[in-house]
Amino acid sequence: MSRFTGPRVRVLRALDADLPGLSRKSKEKRPQRPGQHGGGRWRRPSEYALQLLEKQKLRFNYGLHERQLRRVYREATRLSGVTGDVILGLLERRLDNICFRLGIATTIPAARQIVNHGHVYVNGRRCDVASARLRRGDVITLSDKAREFAAVKDSLDSPRYPIPAWLSWDDKKARATVVALPTVEDVLLEVDMQLIVEFYAR
Image (cartoon, rainbow, N blue to C red):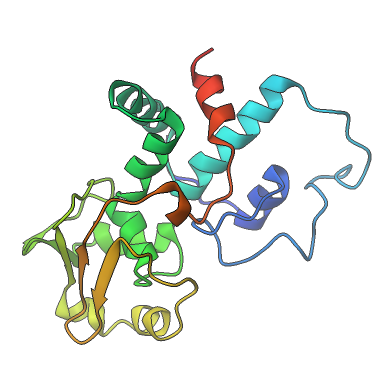
């Protein structure tokens, strides 16, 4: 199964949520659901439908396949802490998401492309695996070529969101350091993790 490359605003409208990692746009201009009958009346969703909706928000925001998200869930259940919070922490530490949170790219898909093309270094070594999970103390740098990209320059000059406290950024050296582990309060996406945990625990 390939990555989602379809219309992103349509996904926002279908999920009735803004996904900061997926798109710079918002569903506010077209709040109705997509499709011919999107503006009509909708019946009350079932408990399963609500769980599925929250799970899809998480999956599309971070750009994961279903198998990847299930793997993260299984790993989170083996770690100490609240399962939902642990899942968010694991996803926030992905390299593509960190590049997005640093303002190197405007969306996670754009950050994934920069990583996949080999423009990001972790602790001095090139890392082209977008799902690589970073730890406290890891240092991220950009290649000289990437620093000259117009998209990267524009994104760094006009960041969409402030850099979270668990990351430090040196603009002169285009270098970042993971100074702490992310918490739930650092997450941009508004999602009910309890429903997601219930979905996978079925």
